[in-house]
Length: 162
Image 1 (cartoon, rainbow, N blue to C red):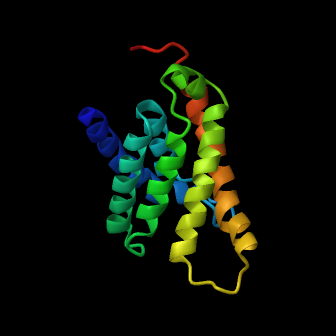
Image 2: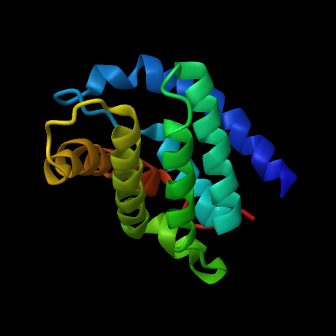
């Protein structure tokens, strides 16, 4: 189990470089997909809810430290997203999740929650209603992240090598 934590953290850093350099180039009206969340959901569905919650906390902590956001905003958002994604963990359905659109739907739910909570804690715009904020800063990044996660579904091996 410790190997999975170390592997997830090792993969995190190159993905963070891609997230901060390449991904802003494909932004649509300021909305970018969250590659860290896709990685978090992947490891959560592989290992379970507790693993996903702890990994979400670690990812959020590292994001807060490295990017300089308001401390705790990414940490609470990723922790809750890992916890929610962990509800879909089922050892018998792992292969079904990664080979179908179900993975992207789980990413959609987790990314919407992550984006909304992150924007709620880090935004200072108080004049917008909560529903408008949910759609602008929650649903749109969630949909974009789910569409990008379809790439993982398309290129996931059909047979489990292990």
